[in-house]
Length: 96
Image (tube, rainbow, N blue to C red; front, side, top):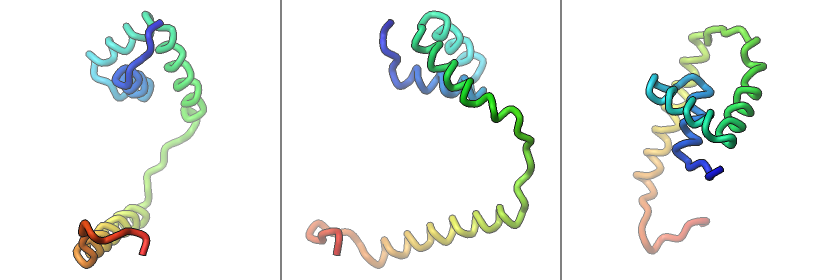
């Protein structure tokens, strides 16, 4: 069996998570039936995902969403401020 390339592995991963289009789904199924390595990878991913089917989904509380967005926004602002205050130059060495 020939090795799977990164595009084929990505296709299989997306297929196992039901993230593929109809065309990609058909392509993934064809790959799985024609390549034992692809079938093995898909079986392992699906087996690993099986316990997740028993979980019940709950919505994220608005307060947690707001806090997460705020943290991300503050982090981005801080990084931007640091990059303006400490511009990188060719003669500057990292590590202090």
